[in-house]
Amino acid sequence: MKVLFFRPRPHKETIGLQNVMICEPLELEYLASNLESKGHETVIIDMILEKKSLAYFLKLHQPDVVGLTGYIAHVNVIKDYARQVKAYNPNLPVVVGGVHAEVNPEDFESEYIDYIVRANGIRTMMDILDSMEGKKDREALPCVYRKDGPMAEKETEFNYLFPARDKVNAYRKKYYYMFHRNCSLIKTSFGCPYSCKFCFCRQITDEKYFTRTLESIVEELEGVPETEIYIVDDDFLVNRERLLTFCDMLEERNIRKKYLIYGRADFIAGNEDVIRRFKEVGLRAVIVGLESCDSNELVDYNKKTNVKINEDAVGILKKYDVECYGTFILGLDWKKEDFKALGKWIKKLGLVFVNLQPLTPLRGTELYEAYRDSFIVREDEYEKWDLAHLVVKPTNISARKYYWYTIVLYYAITVNPASAWYMVKKYGLHDTLKLSVGAFKVNLQYFKKLIQGK
Ligand code: SF4
Image (cartoon, rainbow, N blue to C red):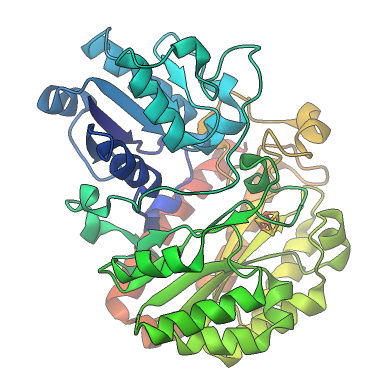
């Protein structure tokens, strides 16, 4: 069968990190390689980078099935794509998957969607195609969502073929993450062994954590032509012995890449030798969920860190010239002084790259019900559940003030001569200007929110 996958373009309301990053659709590349090994044909269309319509690609490729995946902010976009597919051909089956569909499949209930994958995406997509070919009974497929149907048992190991990266060759040069140009994605583990209250990641694997073998990871890396590698594990810095062995294997096999990873502050603070070793074999940047400069808030979030640990972690990354991208949660009870205090602390640490997110109680997390009565964004306005919109009414200031203090904080950290000079010196004028244009676009979206006051 011929499967046409669309990677959705974000809704215009979504405050867009796509202005500072566009990454390859790794999940679709995995589907492509594994489905093709079973004799199917696949095509991936990246609608973030395409200008032509869905109908154009449907006509061009004449698929037997259409596959769509995305996150919470894409729900309405995906439903609209499904509507367009059915307008083109009412008999063309539409399959929807992705992390949001796995945790909240009912959000995709629609007359235009035929299958919602609620677990084990690759295996389930194979099963769906088998059922379409009459080899399996649709009603017996365990991981296809049915209203009031049983929960699906999620996989706890990942034994699939490497992703078919060549399927997005036409777009490859346009994929980047901030200053990491032409970066390729790799996933080496699933889930996270921690349990921060606000985090959606651990819901995806039903709170389980499992890893791929180092042998298969290194083998995959050997086959990736790009130098910049973005390891998209929820937390790559989990097991120091495993990391040290990974570094040795990179060296033994002469794999010379640059790595962008996610890692926790407590690991960095407690394992300086691992950071030093990883730097020797290519560690370039770590996205660290610092979350707060207030230890009480860190306790509230069940982050299992404190301010001292955060400061030590930032200091260690600086010492080894590893870029730190700090992510922070803005409390819903914050007043002007709290925004100011965070700004002061970030400046003290010398952080240049930050992501500021108002606390967002996503459905599936334990915070969701606690805040449900205070939502100021409707639950079906999925495009605004982007971790940048304020979705809960702040308790001490208006939404307008909240957006204003967020903008001021961003400006105070990033738009100043010291930060600009740092970026130009390290990454060059061209890349700095490009990132600044992207950041400016994000700011315009924030200004729009400020004017709307919600
Ligand atoms: S925030 Fe990070 S460390 Fe905490 S549960 Fe989520 S992925 Fe794990």
